[in-house]
Image 1 (cartoon, rainbow, N blue to C red):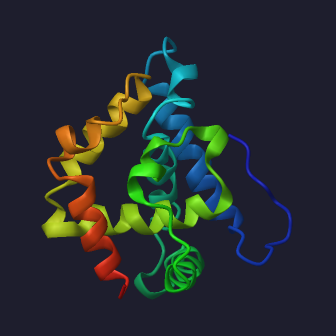
Image 2: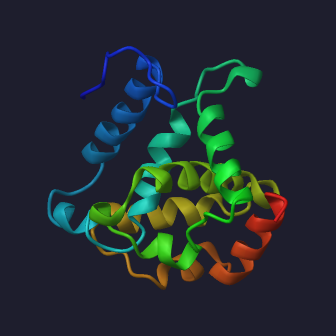
Length: 163
């Protein structure tokens, strides 16, 4: 597990949050076959690989001091400016096209999806993560596994942001 111990920069992660993030990647890596690993980084839904790790960044934090609050605030500012990647485009990105701003959007989106409708989407999100980890993810896996259309969730997500 690699973590950065440099002084916290503006918008950066604390060492603890970075360790939680990178440890999550390491543990998830242990739970998947080596075959297909390289495909995971090039195929659709790479976002959920990062989303799972970003979600764990705040585990154990006091409720009002959750790690990632800066990420969520940064994304909300971008959303207010209209700088949001459409979900269909975000879901199609592999690691190479995944930029810094996508991390903020992904963290916000995943936290919202995880709690949406009382957590009803959690089994589908976890099934999607397994498909990604197996290197078999396809674009149509989100609506098939999560049971919701991307367009419907995009409308609801934007509404939750006030847009």
